[in-house]
Image 1 (cartoon, rainbow, N blue to C red):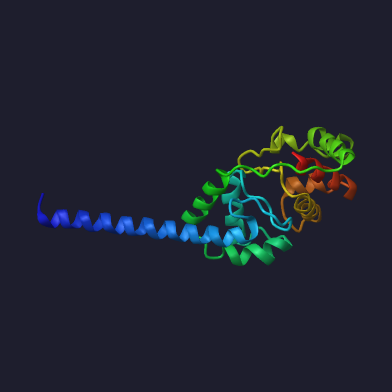
Image 2 (cartoon, rainbow, N blue to C red; image 1 turned 180 degrees about the horizontal axis):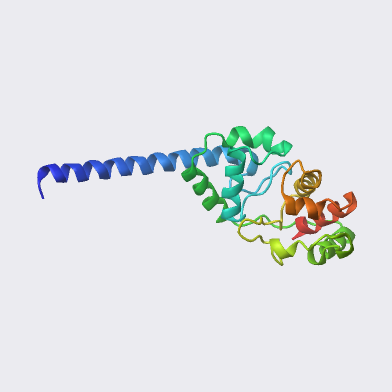
Length: 199
């Protein structure tokens, strides 16, 4: 092997190493920023901000890209996440999704037993006479999530209520979720949220 070829190979290896180190540093810095709202490992202490730990990586990537391109436009997305996601690169988004999806999910918290029971019924069976389909068909039998359908188990109750209200009003655009949440009364939304938060 000639000296020139060897020098080129060494130069390319050095560039690749430098690029990988820079990417890891960017990811680490971004995770640090995310932790101020979502907790160090994605388990948020503030119900304004969702738990990310144990969430589907595919869902997280989809949502981060939707924040970045402004296609997710519910009020809290606009207030918090549009600016935060504006400079995220695809590799950083993929790294964040991989990190948070590998963390242990937040455990459920005690809720009102009557609400849990009412919410469980809606989650498992829906309300057929009002055209409300069951939640577990998409989100899994234990609300553990499935691909682009998010994990709901152990999520903050207040966050779940706010998102269901956003789907219902169509301020968070999603045709399926609008159809499911639109017919729900506030008491039913609260019950579903209580059940999921307890899981």
